[in-house]
Amino acid sequence: MKKYLLLFCFILSYSTYGQLDNPEELSFEEYLGFVKLFHPIAKQANLKIEEGQANLMKARGGFDPKLEVDYNRKDFKSKDYYNLFNATFKVPTWYGIDFKANFEENSGDFLNPQNSVPNNGLFTAGVSASLGQGLFINERMATLKKARFFNNQTKAERDLMANNIVYEAALAYFDWVQAFNETEMYKRFLSNAKIRFEGVRESVLAGDKAGIDSLEANININNRALALEQSKVKLMKNTLMVSNFLWLDNDVPLEINPNVNPKPLEKSEVDSVLQLEELVEFNAEAHPKLIALDSKISGLTVDKRLKANKLLPKVDVQYNFITQDPDIGNSFNTSNYKAGLNVAFPLFLRKERGDLKLAKIKIEATKFERTNTSLSLKNKVEALKRELESYITQNEIIAEVVKDYETLLEAEERKFSFGESSVFLINYRESSLIDAQLKQLKLRNKFYHTKAKLFNSLGTVLN
Image (cartoon, rainbow, N blue to C red; front, side, top):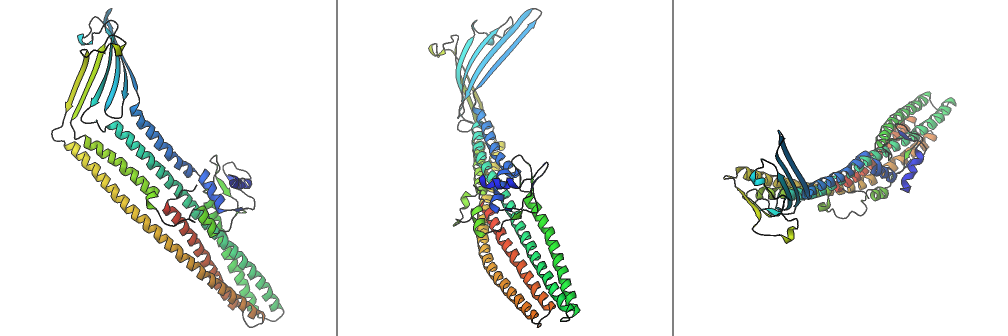
């Protein structure tokens, strides 16, 4: 956290907006550090984890023991028709077996004979089970299994959201750096144009040069001033774009003051911050997108097993030992019991077979999506690696071009000082140099943009 505290030195005041206003440099690492910690989307991504955990807790609730109490009474014209009291404690288990303990106490003048119990009540302990549908998989089991896979899926989705916000923030920072460098470049050329104008003006006043040279030098000043103003507008827009990603811990957005400049970028710093320096071979199987799809397929597979289980006949049995003695363990008698059997089986199974077929189709569709995503990710990463190699070569070439144009401009200015050239030729050489330097800045920015795209394609989550 120490390296991030530097940004707090930039804060002058804030009500709706904080403002960074000391003439300082904001490094790429510090900037992304704030994005990771405080950006609302980064915080929203963490809510995905909580969503998965809450869903898992909800699914586990299907196996919670349950206490039920049922009481009914009827009195009419001073007659006690009935009093029915029934308390049940149920313990669901993983498979389709439930354990149950029950206490029943009933009385009344018009009590249904089947509800008659001893004066001290009746105790019951037993078990219910599904021997067909629901034995090896049931709704409770399926819900819990799917919740576990959904929990893994939400973690992967969280990683994707966190990766994407860092990617967008990095692009904004790189554009800010380019706009700043262009503005600084135009400032230098405007300063050179003003110095050249003063020299030409003195030569015109001395009679060594024609007045038209002074006019052309002044036109050059205005052209450079116009380009500088345009670059300042671009810098202002990009500064605000970067400000969109800067927040304080209490959800207060920060606005970067124009006095705060981006720190010059180094390839090694970008690689280190985006964790690209040790990239040797891309492991697609560890990508959050594929992890999310794998979890989705696992959840759909559980759903398919549940649908297949519905093809079995429904056979529910229950057995309950009955006693009037609260000490159930010592009063067990096999002749006192309640038992039940429930059998059901649809004749055509059209609904069940249709549900199973739809479940299989969903799995196949998701598997096709996973195969396509895996191949796309591998090809995209490989293409970006080759693009980076190309940009390295292009940047080396443009650096040589800029160097040559600088040499031409210096030579032309030397010839001008000897009276062997003109302001027109100097302006021409300088315009060519400006175009080359602009191209150099754009190529450098494209190089860093491609670095960010590679980071995004790898699905990396910054530590």
